[in-house]
Amino acid sequence: MTVALFGRVELRCSAFVLLLFPLAVVFNRLDTLLIAAGSLLVHELAHAVMAHRLGFSLASIELQPFGCVARLRRSPDSPSEAVAIAAAGPLVSLLLALMAAGAAFLSGGAESAASSAPFAAHARHALFAPSALAELSSFNLTLALVNLLPVLPLDGGRLALALASAANGGKRRKAALLLSLGGMLIGGTIAAAGALILAEKPEGMALFRAVSLVVTGSFVVLSAAGERKSVASDGARARLAAASRLRSGSGVRVFPVALHKKSTVREALMAVSGTGYGVVLVVDDDMRSIGVLDEGALMDAAVRGGSGERLGEVVDIE
Image 1: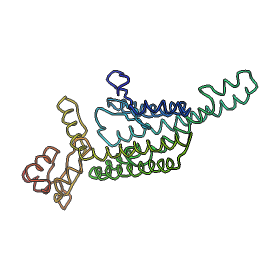
Image 2: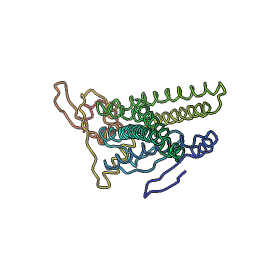
Image 3: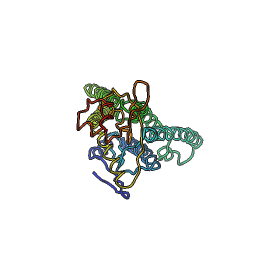
Image 4: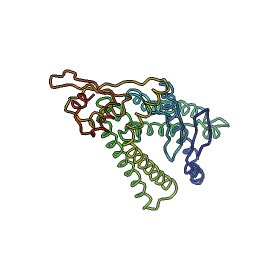
């Protein structure tokens, strides 16, 4: 549900997240939930700020159960842009963890020095007490390290996917399927660990942590499954977005790739998928260019003669 609107950007919150607040109050862990929610929001805002600096507009930020998602109005045009946007979140979380750890160390010394003061008890329960700062540091360090795991939908998976696209556009689909499968396996493992703890009928904080593991793992599994489902339509969405920008008078980046004349139209389309506007340089056995095919020509060839047609034959027709 939408809880606030900042210009054209929606701030959304899952209904389940709202249910976590009374649960946190029951277990006396409202401060922990606020630290987690605030840290996740800062993490996603880092992604959003980097995307804005690169010229991408933000559609919404949604706080979900033990996760936060920033959605852009269009996908990055190049692997370098995708890497910059994906890396911003973990870097800011690491920076926040270091700052909180330093503040906890300094405030801990100040609290020890003031332990005999009349208001020492109040100081120990202040918002910036060493225990709260240490928890903030620990959560953000964990958030950064977990997000660097090379699986989707985590930031590490997006970094790995961008690097695979930079190395070879044709590997992007396979990489996305593999990374999303890894996300489902890791999420399932986390949820299973929480379920095993619940089977022991824990109480108090142990019960709260077990429920958190189940919810977190389930969130990762569902998100990874969604990433896997969307892989098939990524190429089509990228082409539609590029066509829309061209019609509106904006430019798109061109990414050339060289393929042998015996390569198929299917292989060419996979090589240029998700890389902006692709152009294929068709070469012969002597590595000499015999023609150039853009995405429009490749799509026409796929419709006309099937995706198994050789690029050399397409060049002859064109």
